[in-house]
Length: 44
Image 1 (cartoon, rainbow, N blue to C red):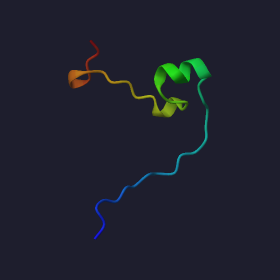
Image 2 (tube, rainbow, N blue to C red; image 1 turned 90 degrees about the vertical axis):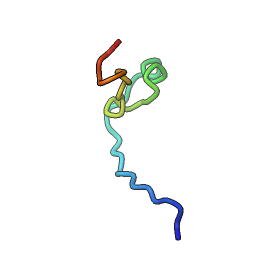
Image 3 (spheres, rainbow, N blue to C red; image 1 turned 45 degrees about the vertical axis):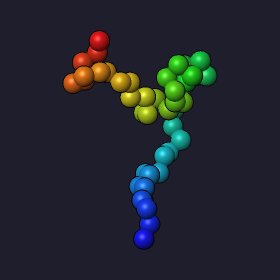
Image 4 (cartoon, one colour; image 1 turned 90 degrees about the horizontal axis):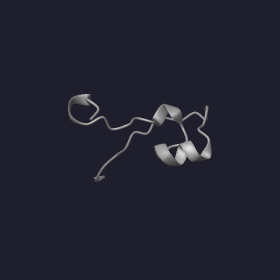
């Protein structure tokens, strides 16, 4: 019996950030840039 199974949708190569912006955001893909907003989605 497998311990766990993952579903990972296919990632299409689209627009990317410049190197400096990518390092600040932690991703090269703007679609994956989901900043943490804090409690209940409210920025602090």
